[in-house]
Structures are given as structure tokens and as C-alpha cells.
Length: 490
Image (cartoon, rainbow, N blue to C red):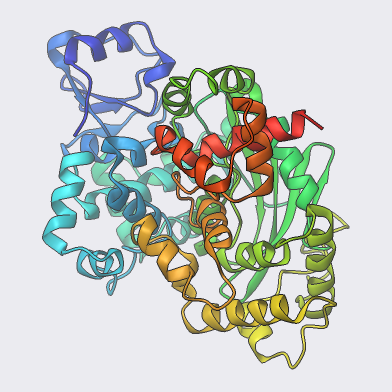
């Protein structure tokens, strides 16, 4: 587990250095509590401090979360520890509930990742200092703690939402950890009042270019499914056959996004929050990426111009794949119109009152629905229509094909087995849907134009692919800067 030297970590704690927030957690022997480095409490003595690289490691060592600095609100940077792609993918699956429930085991998680159970446990100890089970348990406790602090959900719903199988077990865990019942942690003054749904703040590591993110989403918003209004992103969501809606706005002074969730099943809250974090790219250490990309003297000025530029993701892997195919060889606006027509013809209608904006009317159609449809009803070339059919059939048969579980090379190879999916489309899906930080669609016309702005030379796709080697392992973020450079030139 990568943790700074204790003297360095202690100086960060003394100065409440926000650069280390989410990177380290301090366990204080004299109190039995673990804190963030930005905790406002009096700095403990050096000899009483033990530093950990994750909240799970501190909690597994016997410390309980601080009630003042609230470790559950720290930026979630655990997936960056050691840059292990297997650990990052495992953490994403755990966030989606891969270890919740009696039938969900470390062995089944390891199988999904294509590694042995023993190897997965070793990687977790190496990079996070805690076992997969400890990470899952810490996630449940911290998410429950956030719901207790920030919402007025009844304790029964908090228990269900955070993955506890019973209220009794929920109460028992909190009593053992905090020496008080869960209800005693609720401070009415901290609850965010709203009639629209459950509202939560999601922290990120600054800087964050909200303008660029909002512009990207607005340009691609599908009519009926998404809308950007008054600098707030709204969309219809569907999980396990149930419909709801979210609204996301920026809280720059709190270095957070505020998401309001309206959904009938509280058990889905962790998965919804996880998807929001992925779509808005909240879990990255952007300073580390910028430092790496800025070593390229030609790219450095563009990174400095937009230090908070993120890689926008997709809400759903299948939806993103369909968008990618619709966008083949046409403009963003044309692809958006085709997606809107597809939703109009095949999307499920949102029940009255289920959306937080009047423009939200339909959910994006599921793979199973489209696979059964006799005709898609879109005026497109026959080859691209057949590709849409191929993607739909693949997703209906194996939904995990659009989920990140193996290496990027395996993911690209798997996607390219779908008829009509070539290198560009596979790389684009990997970047937006699978959240592969090193995905790079080098043949993209916008990237090639942007590369010309950056390098001053006209490059072929092959030449750009070679040029991008120095940007690894974060070529996806270099791509964002190239696309931005292309946009500036127009």
C-alpha cells in the first residue's frame, strides 16, 4: 500500500493540506478514531498517529470514522492507489454491490475479473491495505453514515440503501463501531431538506471544469431522456426495470456535485451514486494526470489552459454503445436527433410526476426491448442499422460486455467481436462507458484536428497513435485536451 512517509503525512495533517484529502487517513491511537488530513480537530501527537492509504485499511485496523471531518465525504481516490487496473475494476464492481448479499463472494468477484481469489486478496492488501470484504463493509458503513447525516430517510431505508441485509445487523454494526445507535448520529441541522427526492453531495478533487462537462452533456442531450436547464443536468434513469430521475448541479465552494435522486427503490441508491460519480468523472486525481501530461512540452500549454478538464462518461454502457454507433460518420447533432427518434419510438414513458423536469418523458430503450422490435424505424444506411442490431443482440445476450471487468486490451478485443464495431468505436466505448483511462480512438477526426493544433503538424491516425505513447497511461485525458483544442480552433 502506497502511503507517504510518516513525517510527510504528519506535516500534511498539521497544515490540514487538502492535497492529501482522500489520499491518506490517520488513525489516532489515543481516541480510536480515524480522520481525514483536513480534520478541524486538534492535531494529535506524532506518536499517536498511524497513516493509512484507504478508509477501509483504517477501519479494519480497529478505528472508527470521525464524526467531525466525516471520512465518507472525502474524495474517493482509492482506485488510484498503486494504479492497479484489477483493483480499480474490483472497486467499481464492489460499488455496484458485487459483495452485497450472501451469494456474492470474493471468489465470484475474482472470477468476474478473470483472476484467482488469492491473487485478488493479495492485490487488495498491496494497494489498499485491506481485504475485499473489509472494503465492502467500510463502503456500507460510510454510505449509511452519509445518508444518516445528509438525508431524512428512516433508519430502515438507510439500512436497505447501504446494503445491510437486516435492520438488526445495521444497528449492531453501528453500536459496535460508534458505541451508540445509528439514530444518535443524525444531526437535524445537517439534513438537506428537499421534497424532490434524496439529495447527496459528492466530493471531487479540484480543479473541476464544470463548464466543459455541462457543455459536453448539453450538446449530446437526448430529447425526453436528458436536459440541461439553469446549469443543472437532468436525466431519466432505469435500473432493474424501475424508472426514476436525477438532477446534478455544481457546488464549487464545497468542491462537490449535488445529486438529487428520485427513485422508488432505496436499495438502488449506491448503484445510482456510483454511476453519477463515473459519468461525471469524480474519482480521479486530476493533479496527477495533469503533471504527467504536462511533461509533453507541446501539450503542456493546453493542459494549463484547462486544468480541471475531465473525461465525461456514459450513464449506461449499452446506451453509450448505441450512441457511438449512431455517431459513426455523422455530426454530434445528427447523432443526437437519431437517438431522440429511437427514444420516441421505443423508450418507456416516465410515469407522471416521476421526473424533476417537465422535459423528461422517456427512458432510453433497453437492449431486450430493442432486440424484440421488428424494426428500429430509423432512416440510416443499412450497414449501420445492422450494426445497431448486432450491438443490441450482444447486449441482450451478455450485458457485461459493456461493463469494465478485464484489461483494456481484452475489453477492446471483446467489443470488436461485435459485427460493425471497429477500432474507433471500440476505443470510444471503452473511454466513455468502460471508463478506461488509457482508451484512445486515434482515428477520430476531431482528435486528428486537435493534434494538429497541439503539434503544428498534420498527423495520420497511425502517427497520432505513436505520438500518444508518451501520454500513457492517461491517454483518455490527453484526448479530452485534443478535442478541446479542436473546439477552440473553430
